[in-house]
Length: 180
Image (cartoon, rainbow, N blue to C red; front, side):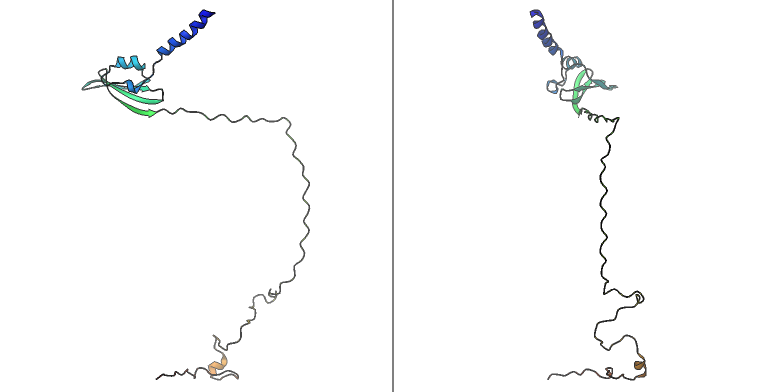
């Protein structure tokens, strides 16, 4: 039993030593591809491999423990450049909706009493300003005092006769007084 208690922590410590993480701070230009793989482990994927006039070019993708993704460029198995590509965003799905429970015997709706009828409104008195039905198209009589001026020519104006009580204003002109 004591041997088993010592063996389990020892196995855990040994397993931690084999776990490799990628660290940008430990990279140095000119490192070989084997040195980078020994220090940081195998790449996540190979982004590109091509033959150029300068030699074989490889671009490998590595991921840090902080979910940052870097591209490392090797030329003839030597590190010549590395750059940050993106930060990986982990997808967290929404929780599923709660289950819908269907009751075999649904509850009965509550019966409410019918509303009481409203009493009829009392009759209103007749409106005094309302025109009569038979004369609805006529205008109500004017309450303004009669000025004696009309827009239409009356028969007395066309003949030149003056009605009684009216004065002929067309011949009278206002006079001006001059000051000296």
